[in-house]
Figure 1 (tube, rainbow, N blue to C red):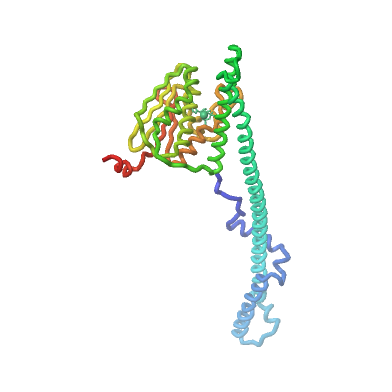
Figure 2 (figure 1 turned 135 degrees about the vertical axis):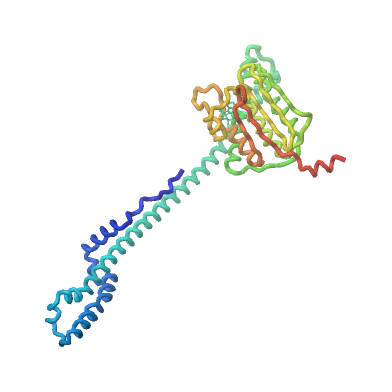
Length: 363
Ligand SMILES: Nc1ncnc2c1ncn2[C@@H]1O[C@H](COP(=O)(O)OP(=O)(O)O)[C@@H](O)[C@H]1O
Ligand SMILES: [Mg+2]
Protein backbone atom coordinates (compact mmCIF):
# COMPACT_ATOMS: atom_id res chain seq x y z
CA UNK A 1 0.00 0.00 0.00
CA UNK A 2 1.23 3.44 -0.88
CA UNK A 3 0.97 6.02 1.86
CA UNK A 4 -0.86 8.98 0.34
CA UNK A 5 0.62 11.53 2.79
CA UNK A 6 3.06 12.50 0.02
CA UNK A 7 6.35 14.36 0.52
CA UNK A 8 6.83 16.51 3.61
CA UNK A 9 5.29 19.94 3.00
CA UNK A 10 6.97 23.18 4.14
CA UNK A 11 5.66 24.36 7.50
CA UNK A 12 2.68 26.68 7.21
CA UNK A 13 0.90 28.90 9.75
CA UNK A 14 1.27 32.24 11.45
CA UNK A 15 4.51 31.41 13.27
CA UNK A 16 6.26 30.17 10.18
CA UNK A 17 5.07 33.19 8.17
CA UNK A 18 6.48 35.56 10.83
CA UNK A 19 9.79 33.71 10.83
CA UNK A 20 10.04 33.94 7.03
CA UNK A 21 9.15 37.63 7.16
CA UNK A 22 11.84 38.43 9.76
CA UNK A 23 14.41 36.43 7.78
CA UNK A 24 13.45 38.38 4.64
CA UNK A 25 14.14 41.66 6.46
CA UNK A 26 17.79 40.61 6.58
CA UNK A 27 17.97 39.96 2.84
CA UNK A 28 19.48 42.71 0.63
CA UNK A 29 16.88 41.87 -2.00
CA UNK A 30 14.17 43.33 0.26
CA UNK A 31 15.78 46.78 -0.26
CA UNK A 32 16.60 46.39 -3.94
CA UNK A 33 15.02 48.34 -6.82
CA UNK A 34 14.72 44.97 -8.58
CA UNK A 35 12.21 43.93 -5.96
CA UNK A 36 8.81 44.85 -7.41
CA UNK A 37 7.25 44.50 -3.96
CA UNK A 38 9.58 47.19 -2.53
CA UNK A 39 8.88 49.62 -5.40
CA UNK A 40 5.13 49.02 -5.13
CA UNK A 41 5.31 49.57 -1.35
CA UNK A 42 7.15 52.87 -1.85
CA UNK A 43 4.55 54.13 -4.34
CA UNK A 44 1.73 52.90 -2.15
CA UNK A 45 3.11 54.85 0.82
CA UNK A 46 3.83 58.12 -0.99
CA UNK A 47 0.36 59.68 -0.68
CA UNK A 48 0.38 59.22 3.11
CA UNK A 49 2.89 61.99 4.10
CA UNK A 50 1.65 64.15 1.29
CA UNK A 51 -1.99 64.23 2.33
CA UNK A 52 -1.54 63.92 6.08
CA UNK A 53 1.02 66.74 6.26
CA UNK A 54 -1.02 68.89 3.90
CA UNK A 55 -4.17 68.50 5.99
CA UNK A 56 -2.20 69.11 9.18
CA UNK A 57 -0.44 72.23 7.92
CA UNK A 58 -3.55 73.70 6.28
CA UNK A 59 -5.41 73.25 9.54
CA UNK A 60 -2.68 75.20 11.43
CA UNK A 61 -3.04 78.11 8.95
CA UNK A 62 0.73 78.65 8.76
CA UNK A 63 2.87 78.50 5.57
CA UNK A 64 4.81 75.22 5.04
CA UNK A 65 8.48 75.07 6.09
CA UNK A 66 10.63 71.92 6.63
CA UNK A 67 10.96 72.83 10.35
CA UNK A 68 7.20 72.30 10.67
CA UNK A 69 7.81 68.53 10.20
CA UNK A 70 10.08 68.23 13.22
CA UNK A 71 7.65 70.16 15.39
CA UNK A 72 5.46 67.10 15.98
CA UNK A 73 6.92 63.54 16.02
CA UNK A 74 3.74 62.12 14.38
CA UNK A 75 4.64 64.12 11.26
CA UNK A 76 8.00 62.31 11.06
CA UNK A 77 6.13 59.03 11.33
CA UNK A 78 3.88 60.05 8.42
CA UNK A 79 6.92 61.09 6.42
CA UNK A 80 8.56 57.69 6.93
CA UNK A 81 5.47 55.86 5.67
CA UNK A 82 6.63 55.27 2.07
CA UNK A 83 9.80 53.62 3.41
CA UNK A 84 7.91 51.49 5.93
CA UNK A 85 5.59 50.30 3.16
CA UNK A 86 8.56 49.70 0.88
CA UNK A 87 10.26 47.51 3.53
CA UNK A 88 7.07 45.56 4.37
CA UNK A 89 6.12 44.96 0.73
CA UNK A 90 9.76 44.32 -0.14
CA UNK A 91 10.04 41.63 2.56
CA UNK A 92 6.90 39.98 1.19
CA UNK A 93 8.48 40.11 -2.28
CA UNK A 94 11.57 38.35 -0.89
CA UNK A 95 9.45 35.65 0.77
CA UNK A 96 7.60 35.09 -2.49
CA UNK A 97 10.85 34.85 -4.43
CA UNK A 98 12.21 32.28 -1.97
CA UNK A 99 9.06 30.22 -2.20
CA UNK A 100 9.13 30.41 -5.99
CA UNK A 101 12.70 29.17 -6.02
CA UNK A 102 11.86 26.28 -3.68
CA UNK A 103 8.99 25.24 -5.93
CA UNK A 104 11.15 25.50 -9.05
CA UNK A 105 13.80 23.34 -7.36
CA UNK A 106 11.16 20.76 -6.40
CA UNK A 107 9.76 20.69 -9.92
CA UNK A 108 13.25 20.18 -11.34
CA UNK A 109 13.94 17.35 -8.91
CA UNK A 110 10.60 15.76 -9.76
CA UNK A 111 11.25 16.00 -13.47
CA UNK A 112 14.66 14.41 -12.99
CA UNK A 113 13.18 11.58 -10.90
CA UNK A 114 10.42 11.01 -13.47
CA UNK A 115 13.00 10.76 -16.26
CA UNK A 116 15.07 8.31 -14.19
CA UNK A 117 12.00 6.20 -13.43
CA UNK A 118 10.84 6.04 -17.01
CA UNK A 119 14.37 5.03 -18.07
CA UNK A 120 14.43 2.27 -15.44
CA UNK A 121 10.97 1.16 -16.51
CA UNK A 122 11.99 0.87 -20.15
CA UNK A 123 15.03 -1.17 -19.09
CA UNK A 124 12.85 -3.50 -16.99
CA UNK A 125 10.41 -3.99 -19.85
CA UNK A 126 13.24 -4.87 -22.17
CA UNK A 127 14.65 -7.33 -19.60
CA UNK A 128 11.21 -8.87 -19.18
CA UNK A 129 10.90 -9.32 -22.92
CA UNK A 130 14.35 -10.91 -23.10
CA UNK A 131 13.49 -13.21 -20.19
CA UNK A 132 10.27 -14.35 -21.87
CA UNK A 133 12.11 -14.93 -25.14
CA UNK A 134 14.87 -16.84 -23.38
CA UNK A 135 12.38 -18.98 -21.46
CA UNK A 136 10.42 -19.76 -24.62
CA UNK A 137 13.59 -20.80 -26.46
CA UNK A 138 15.00 -22.87 -23.62
CA UNK A 139 11.77 -24.73 -22.93
CA UNK A 140 11.35 -25.41 -26.61
CA UNK A 141 14.94 -26.68 -26.93
CA UNK A 142 14.52 -28.89 -23.86
CA UNK A 143 11.55 -30.62 -25.40
CA UNK A 144 13.41 -31.96 -28.45
CA UNK A 145 15.89 -34.28 -26.67
CA UNK A 146 13.18 -35.23 -24.20
CA UNK A 147 10.95 -36.53 -26.96
CA UNK A 148 13.83 -38.75 -28.08
CA UNK A 149 14.46 -40.06 -24.54
CA UNK A 150 10.78 -40.85 -24.07
CA UNK A 151 10.44 -42.41 -27.50
CA UNK A 152 13.47 -44.67 -27.11
CA UNK A 153 12.52 -45.72 -23.57
CA UNK A 154 9.14 -46.72 -24.97
CA UNK A 155 10.67 -48.63 -27.90
CA UNK A 156 13.01 -50.50 -25.51
CA UNK A 157 10.21 -51.31 -23.06
CA UNK A 158 8.00 -52.55 -25.91
CA UNK A 159 10.85 -54.83 -27.02
CA UNK A 160 11.04 -53.17 -30.43
CA UNK A 161 14.83 -52.72 -30.21
CA UNK A 162 15.41 -56.37 -29.38
CA UNK A 163 15.34 -58.25 -26.13
CA UNK A 164 16.89 -56.87 -22.97
CA UNK A 165 17.46 -58.42 -19.56
CA UNK A 166 14.47 -58.44 -17.16
CA UNK A 167 16.68 -56.71 -14.57
CA UNK A 168 16.72 -53.55 -16.75
CA UNK A 169 12.94 -53.37 -17.07
CA UNK A 170 12.42 -51.33 -13.89
CA UNK A 171 15.25 -48.95 -14.84
CA UNK A 172 13.78 -48.16 -18.25
CA UNK A 173 10.33 -47.76 -16.76
CA UNK A 174 11.75 -45.12 -14.42
CA UNK A 175 13.45 -43.39 -17.37
CA UNK A 176 10.13 -43.23 -19.20
CA UNK A 177 8.15 -42.00 -16.18
CA UNK A 178 10.74 -39.34 -15.39
CA UNK A 179 10.80 -38.18 -19.00
CA UNK A 180 7.01 -37.93 -18.94
CA UNK A 181 7.12 -35.89 -15.76
CA UNK A 182 9.72 -33.55 -17.19
CA UNK A 183 7.63 -33.23 -20.34
CA UNK A 184 4.59 -32.23 -18.27
CA UNK A 185 6.60 -29.62 -16.39
CA UNK A 186 7.96 -28.13 -19.61
CA UNK A 187 4.43 -28.06 -21.04
CA UNK A 188 3.36 -26.26 -17.87
CA UNK A 189 6.10 -23.66 -18.36
CA UNK A 190 5.13 -23.13 -22.00
CA UNK A 191 1.46 -22.85 -21.11
CA UNK A 192 2.21 -20.41 -18.33
CA UNK A 193 4.25 -18.19 -20.64
CA UNK A 194 1.26 -17.94 -22.96
CA UNK A 195 -1.03 -16.92 -20.11
CA UNK A 196 1.49 -14.58 -18.51
CA UNK A 197 2.25 -12.83 -21.79
CA UNK A 198 -1.45 -12.23 -22.43
CA UNK A 199 -1.24 -14.55 -25.45
CA UNK A 200 -3.99 -16.91 -24.32
CA UNK A 201 -6.61 -17.35 -27.04
CA UNK A 202 -9.58 -19.62 -26.49
CA UNK A 203 -11.07 -21.90 -29.10
CA UNK A 204 -14.57 -22.20 -27.66
CA UNK A 205 -16.69 -25.13 -28.77
CA UNK A 206 -19.28 -27.53 -27.42
CA UNK A 207 -17.79 -30.79 -26.14
CA UNK A 208 -18.47 -33.61 -23.71
CA UNK A 209 -16.88 -32.69 -20.39
CA UNK A 210 -17.36 -36.19 -18.97
CA UNK A 211 -15.23 -37.94 -21.56
CA UNK A 212 -12.51 -35.30 -21.04
CA UNK A 213 -12.67 -35.92 -17.30
CA UNK A 214 -12.36 -39.71 -17.79
CA UNK A 215 -9.42 -39.15 -20.12
CA UNK A 216 -7.69 -36.93 -17.53
CA UNK A 217 -8.26 -39.50 -14.79
CA UNK A 218 -6.81 -42.24 -17.03
CA UNK A 219 -3.57 -40.26 -17.35
CA UNK A 220 -2.98 -40.65 -13.63
CA UNK A 221 -3.96 -44.32 -13.32
CA UNK A 222 -0.34 -45.51 -12.92
CA UNK A 223 0.30 -43.14 -9.97
CA UNK A 224 -3.15 -43.84 -8.52
CA UNK A 225 -2.48 -47.56 -8.56
CA UNK A 226 1.05 -47.14 -7.25
CA UNK A 227 -0.19 -45.19 -4.20
CA UNK A 228 -3.19 -47.47 -3.68
CA UNK A 229 -5.50 -44.46 -4.01
CA UNK A 230 -9.22 -45.24 -4.23
CA UNK A 231 -10.68 -43.20 -7.07
CA UNK A 232 -14.39 -42.30 -6.89
CA UNK A 233 -15.79 -41.05 -10.17
CA UNK A 234 -19.24 -39.50 -9.75
CA UNK A 235 -19.98 -38.62 -13.35
CA UNK A 236 -23.11 -38.45 -15.50
CA UNK A 237 -23.19 -40.34 -18.82
CA UNK A 238 -22.35 -37.17 -20.75
CA UNK A 239 -22.51 -33.44 -20.19
CA UNK A 240 -21.97 -30.94 -22.98
CA UNK A 241 -20.29 -27.67 -22.02
CA UNK A 242 -19.21 -24.62 -24.01
CA UNK A 243 -15.52 -23.92 -23.48
CA UNK A 244 -12.05 -24.56 -24.88
CA UNK A 245 -11.67 -28.37 -24.59
CA UNK A 246 -7.88 -28.37 -24.70
CA UNK A 247 -7.55 -25.71 -22.00
CA UNK A 248 -10.19 -27.31 -19.78
CA UNK A 249 -8.33 -30.60 -20.22
CA UNK A 250 -5.26 -28.80 -18.84
CA UNK A 251 -7.30 -27.50 -15.86
CA UNK A 252 -8.50 -31.05 -15.06
CA UNK A 253 -4.98 -32.46 -15.39
CA UNK A 254 -3.46 -29.81 -13.11
CA UNK A 255 -6.12 -30.20 -10.41
CA UNK A 256 -5.96 -34.01 -10.56
CA UNK A 257 -2.17 -33.93 -10.50
CA UNK A 258 -2.29 -31.99 -7.20
CA UNK A 259 -4.95 -34.27 -5.73
CA UNK A 260 -2.91 -37.37 -6.63
CA UNK A 261 0.37 -35.82 -5.53
CA UNK A 262 -0.88 -34.72 -2.12
CA UNK A 263 -3.09 -37.79 -1.45
CA UNK A 264 -1.82 -40.05 1.30
CA UNK A 265 -1.25 -43.72 0.38
CA UNK A 266 -4.58 -45.59 0.17
CA UNK A 267 -6.48 -42.30 0.47
CA UNK A 268 -9.77 -41.51 -1.25
CA UNK A 269 -9.91 -39.21 -4.28
CA UNK A 270 -13.16 -37.91 -5.71
CA UNK A 271 -13.94 -36.43 -9.08
CA UNK A 272 -17.58 -35.40 -9.47
CA UNK A 273 -19.44 -33.54 -12.20
CA UNK A 274 -22.96 -32.18 -11.71
CA UNK A 275 -25.19 -30.21 -14.02
CA UNK A 276 -27.23 -27.26 -12.77
CA UNK A 277 -27.46 -23.89 -14.41
CA UNK A 278 -23.83 -24.54 -15.18
CA UNK A 279 -21.60 -27.59 -15.08
CA UNK A 280 -19.99 -28.00 -11.67
CA UNK A 281 -16.73 -29.91 -11.28
CA UNK A 282 -15.39 -31.04 -7.91
CA UNK A 283 -12.06 -32.72 -7.27
CA UNK A 284 -11.29 -33.65 -3.67
CA UNK A 285 -8.57 -35.51 -1.80
CA UNK A 286 -7.66 -36.56 1.73
CA UNK A 287 -4.22 -34.93 1.69
CA UNK A 288 -2.75 -32.45 4.17
CA UNK A 289 -5.32 -29.74 3.33
CA UNK A 290 -4.54 -26.04 3.18
CA UNK A 291 -3.41 -23.58 5.81
CA UNK A 292 -4.85 -20.04 5.77
CA UNK A 293 -1.51 -18.91 4.35
CA UNK A 294 -1.70 -21.51 1.56
CA UNK A 295 -5.23 -20.47 0.67
CA UNK A 296 -4.05 -16.89 0.22
CA UNK A 297 -1.20 -17.78 -2.14
CA UNK A 298 -2.45 -20.86 -4.01
CA UNK A 299 -2.83 -19.08 -7.33
CA UNK A 300 0.40 -17.09 -7.07
CA UNK A 301 2.88 -18.23 -9.66
CA UNK A 302 5.78 -20.34 -8.37
CA UNK A 303 4.24 -20.45 -4.90
CA UNK A 304 4.34 -23.78 -3.02
CA UNK A 305 3.43 -24.44 0.61
CA UNK A 306 6.76 -26.24 0.86
CA UNK A 307 9.22 -24.37 -1.34
CA UNK A 308 12.36 -25.88 0.23
CA UNK A 309 14.78 -27.84 -1.91
CA UNK A 310 14.25 -30.88 0.34
CA UNK A 311 10.49 -30.88 -0.20
CA UNK A 312 8.74 -34.20 -0.63
CA UNK A 313 6.60 -33.21 -3.61
CA UNK A 314 8.05 -31.93 -6.87
CA UNK A 315 6.45 -29.41 -9.21
CA UNK A 316 6.98 -25.90 -10.48
CA UNK A 317 4.33 -24.04 -8.51
CA UNK A 318 2.72 -22.97 -11.79
CA UNK A 319 -0.12 -25.49 -11.99
CA UNK A 320 -2.75 -23.46 -10.17
CA UNK A 321 -1.63 -20.14 -11.70
CA UNK A 322 -2.35 -21.75 -15.08
CA UNK A 323 -5.69 -23.12 -13.87
CA UNK A 324 -6.71 -19.67 -12.67
CA UNK A 325 -5.52 -17.98 -15.88
CA UNK A 326 -7.52 -20.39 -18.04
CA UNK A 327 -10.71 -20.17 -15.96
CA UNK A 328 -10.42 -16.37 -15.74
CA UNK A 329 -10.22 -16.23 -19.52
CA UNK A 330 -13.43 -18.30 -19.62
CA UNK A 331 -15.08 -15.97 -17.09
CA UNK A 332 -15.44 -18.93 -14.72
CA UNK A 333 -14.81 -19.07 -10.99
CA UNK A 334 -12.70 -21.54 -9.00
CA UNK A 335 -12.57 -22.15 -5.28
CA UNK A 336 -9.98 -24.34 -3.59
CA UNK A 337 -10.58 -24.86 0.10
CA UNK A 338 -9.96 -27.33 2.91
CA UNK A 339 -12.30 -30.31 2.64
CA UNK A 340 -14.59 -30.99 5.58
CA UNK A 341 -12.96 -33.69 7.63
CA UNK A 342 -9.57 -33.59 5.99
CA UNK A 343 -7.95 -32.86 2.68
CA UNK A 344 -8.60 -30.30 -0.03
CA UNK A 345 -11.40 -29.73 -2.51
CA UNK A 346 -11.39 -27.76 -5.73
CA UNK A 347 -14.66 -26.53 -7.24
CA UNK A 348 -15.12 -24.80 -10.56
CA UNK A 349 -17.93 -24.25 -12.99
CA UNK A 350 -18.31 -24.10 -16.75
CA UNK A 351 -21.07 -22.71 -18.94
CA UNK A 352 -23.56 -25.03 -20.65
CA UNK A 353 -24.55 -24.35 -24.26
CA UNK A 354 -27.17 -21.60 -24.64
CA UNK A 355 -30.74 -22.88 -23.92
CA UNK A 356 -31.95 -21.76 -27.36
CA UNK A 357 -29.47 -24.14 -29.02
CA UNK A 358 -30.69 -26.98 -26.82
CA UNK A 359 -34.34 -26.19 -27.67
CA UNK A 360 -33.54 -26.54 -31.36
CA UNK A 361 -32.30 -30.10 -31.05
CA UNK A 362 -34.94 -31.29 -28.57
CA UNK A 363 -38.30 -31.67 -30.35
N1 LIG B 1 -4.74 -30.78 -3.31
C1 LIG B 1 -3.83 -30.10 -2.61
N2 LIG B 1 -3.54 -30.41 -1.32
C2 LIG B 1 -2.63 -29.73 -0.61
N3 LIG B 1 -1.94 -28.68 -1.08
C3 LIG B 1 -2.16 -28.30 -2.34
C4 LIG B 1 -3.13 -28.98 -3.16
N4 LIG B 1 -3.14 -28.36 -4.38
C5 LIG B 1 -2.24 -27.37 -4.31
N5 LIG B 1 -1.64 -27.31 -3.09
C6 LIG B 1 -0.60 -26.36 -2.63
O1 LIG B 1 -0.50 -25.33 -3.62
C7 LIG B 1 0.80 -25.29 -4.16
C8 LIG B 1 0.77 -24.83 -5.59
O2 LIG B 1 0.17 -25.79 -6.42
P1 LIG B 1 0.50 -25.77 -7.96
O3 LIG B 1 0.31 -24.39 -8.46
O4 LIG B 1 -0.28 -26.87 -8.64
O5 LIG B 1 2.06 -26.07 -8.02
P2 LIG B 1 2.85 -27.44 -7.83
O6 LIG B 1 1.84 -28.56 -7.91
O7 LIG B 1 3.81 -27.47 -8.97
O8 LIG B 1 3.51 -27.34 -6.50
C9 LIG B 1 1.34 -26.69 -3.93
O9 LIG B 1 2.76 -26.71 -3.93
C10 LIG B 1 0.75 -27.03 -2.59
O10 LIG B 1 1.51 -26.42 -1.57
MG1 LIG C 1 0.43 -28.78 -9.39
